[in-house]
Length: 113
Image (tube, rainbow, N blue to C red; front, side, top):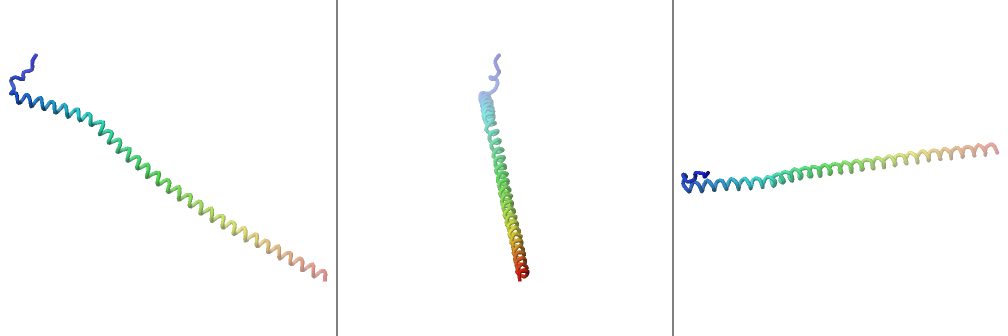
């Protein structure tokens, strides 16, 4: 079986063949471009995910640093307040014991005289 291309003018047959070749080439280029397009889309998605993850990491690091600073400040304030209370209570107890010693020694001296 022979295709009847002889009834068509030669220019039309050549243009049909050229169009078929162009369609085949376009299909080949498109099918070769699909992995490139998919790779580009995947790269873009990964870039967005990595950028978002980097932003999340930065936010988490900032939050952790702020929490650590707040904890250190609170601990320092508690230590200062506790040492202040402790020193004031020890000084008041030592002064009251000094008063007791003075009063007991003066009463002993009064008893001796």
